[in-house]
View 1 (cartoon, helix red, strand yellow):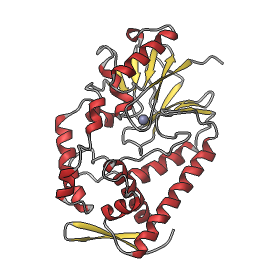
View 2: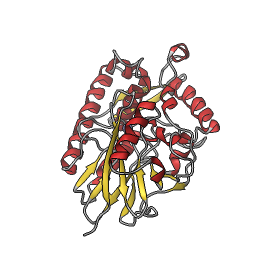
View 3: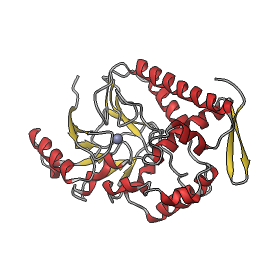
View 4: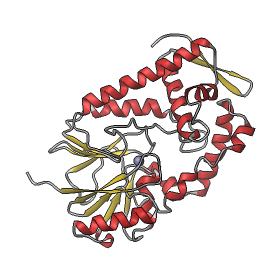
Length: 321
Ligand SMILES: [Zn+2]
């Protein structure tokens, strides 16, 4: 059974997550999956490791991005503009730094955070929550792909949509041997963060990233997977066991939040401060995303309800898990 060879390239990032993995697929077209972070160190590490497998950056014929986060797209700015970039359409406004989308993102969160119980004064004091975008890129998305699509030059591979960690998240699956390039969907040692994003257009409903993420985790159980190579850290081989573990752990966290709501009704921000008292200011977006995720989950399973009081939503425990 002939298969495309795959090579891993690992580069440093300035983020808490540490190094990020990229993959080179020697298919009918030389394909890079994910593109590091925009720093000189990452570029040096990338070109060095690429040379070790016999290539130069200009040999790359296309880049597939698993999602739009800076540590997976930043080096697109270092690569020749002629190399097509392939990814989910929802990655487009992020990787192109679409000013209209960013303005919408700002307006949306201003309003949304008030509903979460964050005061304007507190929000004004915070460092820019989108500051990590300076490690991102400014590139167009040349080819949009989605569920079930194939990519030119990679006939054995299929795109599977896995929203949650990012709305634009996809993985690549090779059915003939169950090999998956998984981006940040399922990581061996850390649980992936379902991050808050604005609705893709004005007026649309807010995505509920943790609920999507849980669904995307369960979706993996429908595939015969021999190995997942990941965006950070080691490979995953026993997918069903790890999916089970992640879902269990998440339910446990939600149970903890439900206990808090039994003590007293709370806003999202009340819950966030209590859950993450030492880091919520520094990691505002991450911790708020995590908190909203748990509250969306509790609401979804009927264990909590929210009601509007003035400008804020108050969550209240009404059931059990
Ligand atoms: Zn990542």
